[in-house]
Image (tube, rainbow, N blue to C red; front, side, top):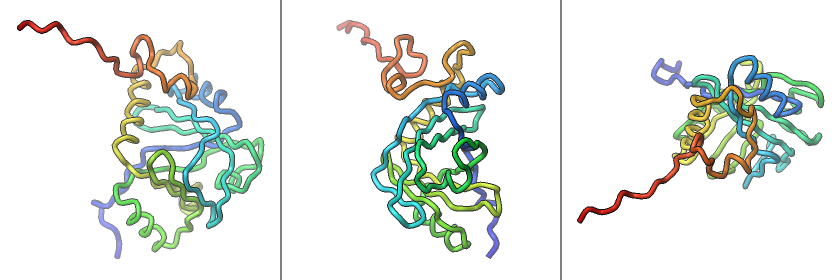
Length: 200
């Protein structure tokens, strides 16, 4: 049965395979005013599969916003088979996938499988599920479905707030060690303050 308009999926992310996270972040910052981007080097997962096998490549990510759209950069450091090497050899760059958030992850995964799309990669990390379907025949790239637990949405909100408060003279890429610690000026993180003295 054909889907109705009420079942429209809203894309929240565009992802690109790049040779260097920092260079990509600088290009997008200069060209579009995107970012800042937040790096997660050599990302580790709790569970991972690539085309049904426990093969996990060594990859680093960077995430940032351009308006309401999240932009992700992916850099692969080895030659392990992956959904990235499926599209790009070392030295090549380009668009890789789109993504949308789902509440019923298992149900949406089954819906795409029932439509005949191949599950190319699935993972569980940072308390959330993600899966990548090989939709190149339809979109020119992969499609990611990503769970939407509150802690993940909170992190996305932090990155978006950083974009809204973006300093054009600030860094285009912020490393994990930097963005995990509160800043002195509170630009990215909420800063607690002492309560006023009691009056009685």
